[in-house]
Image (cartoon, rainbow, N blue to C red; front, side, top):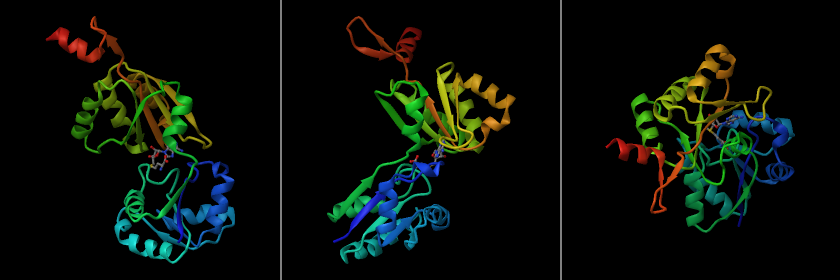
Length: 246
Ligand code: SAM
């Protein structure tokens, strides 16, 4: 019986593909890729000719039987997404859940993931963090979501695209005021940049240099500071402030 390999691919710098990932991609019978045209460039770079099928959010459920039948027939299959680790804000969860239920062998191959790459160099606390994925597209929903997370004490990590980075920074400014924010842009690529400051300061930086608003972003926000009460219980500064105001 075959194995499904869940293979992380680079998030920019192609040298970040591990030798193990390259070997597995070359040796499997089939690669299920989020976008076969996109991944064809990576495979061409590696000189790999393994056949591909698409597996994206619109056909994931339908592909399961086909991929499972191939695994049952003893074939080896690799799952990749456009960049980074599959299933992390990318397709694959439905497939992996279903194959686990069917007791198929699933082997993860570690590699790049924008959220851990960003956290590893941001200088914000990493002992606990919350990965929040992409914020809702609509302004009202986005603010409401941020309000819900306002008192979380762990570092908050978001994915963001260039066309919403302004709107997200504005929402962060409204909800988190002067809290430290780190923007990690174009990680592992030529224009990799880390910017830090309040959301307001970062908006000013982007206004001064529109190039800073281009590319892909990981947005990180420091958690709410914990305040110790007399009883020794930790409550957040926002909760305490609200109680005092009340
Ligand atoms: N599966 C990917 C991973 O493991 O990170 C994430 C895929 S998600 C569809 C794409 C988002 O990841 C981008 O909008 C951006 O927020 C983040 N991202 C991916 N590559 C990045 C990079 N090189 N620099 C900064 N952020 C990146």
